[in-house]
Length: 358
Ligand SMILES: [Ca+2]
Image 1: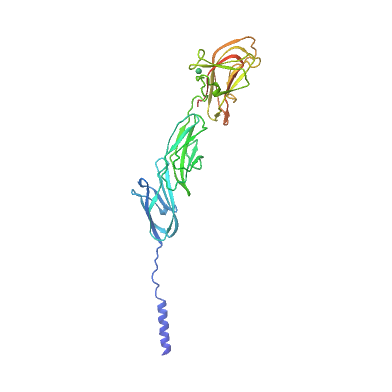
Image 2: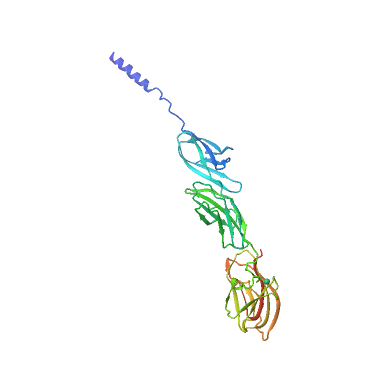
């Protein structure tokens, strides 16, 4: 009898053991939803992903709302990016921890930073202007430049960084005349990029690269030029003998002297462009013994023009206004200083030009 009882008890325990366990929660997938706005209101058509995975990707609705389902529990990053019409964009990324359905209604992106068309354009400068950001976590603006399109922070040259939110302009200097430049600005916070602007482009001015090449600003020759190899030259501004504007420059020096005048600023020449150097000359009187010539050049092969190169002057000569022009190019970037000079007692020079012609 006792054995039978023990048997029954053992059977019962066995049966109890064989009963199914109660069902555990089987799903650990949740939804991540929220709303993306900026200070103007909801942002529609923003791309939202969890961990940049295609199965966890969506775009915001016209009211800026989104929902991504079946997100596994754990640590993730939510990426939000809104692209504009002309390559501008703003973006944010947010670390999230998912262990329940998550709602993020406070995803605020900055207003895109916009570059305006460059202003104050000269042969060597232009001013870049953008709108002030409203980003609360602003850290810095980074301005990039390139001489071809397709500009981003890897292809461009970083030319300016500002940590002041109110700093919304930059003067680009030392540019090449008659050259197109592209600009783009990026918005940064302490974690990285918050946005990139549209790309703007503008060309510097061409025209004559010699300041007052026509000698129209009376008395300014030593503002633009300095003398070398000469010491007895006297310059006048002649309004009776000229070919361009109201004046020409007249130099007269003691017989036997030679004077060269060098421009106070240099000119940068680029390969791939064609340059023109031209001027008008007039001569009278004797020439110095070994320098009976008059010239303008850039100290670059092929860039010089000479009106007179005879070494056999034995008596005073007269040469009426003569125009000379040379076209040249360079095979590498060259920084040059234009000069003109002469060994005659009296010479006139007018309308010196150096310009890019193509
Ligand atoms: Ca003139």
